[in-house]
Image: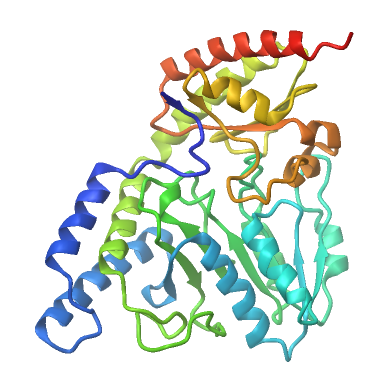
Length: 378
């Protein structure tokens, strides 16, 4: 089996699962309980939180634990919108976002908020002049992903955050789901940041929203004391420990993994660009972990299932997308609807081997010629 869908989810590392299991068995008390077992649970919770804060360069008090990036994105967008609606009801985003960004934004439109889409240039990068034109006194939030999940396109969110400091009424939210564990990124000029553990070999069901200390949010979940006043619920200590460990382990491997992945992706591109009907939807601003290609004249799911028969697993659009035939993100990058209609995503990791890449290319060649023959115009 060759798994090339790491951007959708990653396998859980053995060390992370072992930590989760051990804590589940031994530290089962509520960390908000006042007795000794509760105090011990609170200490473990704080150790994990302090470690995350140290790695990401934020304060422990700025970490909100969630069920994953989708909840974090919803919490950031709705939380800001309802808390600061008295300042304005204008939000700006891009055509390169995850469905968990568009979902809450569409919801807010029904409640009187206005959503604008900032343009991107020929390389898919945010047009800073257009962003400046869109900003008004009513703009309370700009939400831009650091890395697009389908194309790997990386936006200069640190620079955008610096620019937005000139607009103190406007907060800056960054979906970092495809960044954490893959690239170095600074939170210094970012107000809110979302991510999930299962994107870097952690467990499903745990994520974080990093929220600067001075910001207040209207909670999505009300109910009582937890790790923070912004998200009620009994603290999930085993999951909190697991995300901390997963983050520590992947952070230790960040640079070596990047170099390995970059080498393999360069090799993939060199081989795939030889095919006349293959479009490479990748440029110098894309991280190497995600390679998007289009096999023209062939439906994406046809190629996906042809490779699946060879026990090779890639994806079409984001696994969380609504299933549109045209990839919104690829269209934004390529400026070509036909290319966007035929795109698939190959996503690799530090776990991917050169042997797997070679086998993928071998099987892709067979699928390409078979499908190209079947779909060849008469």
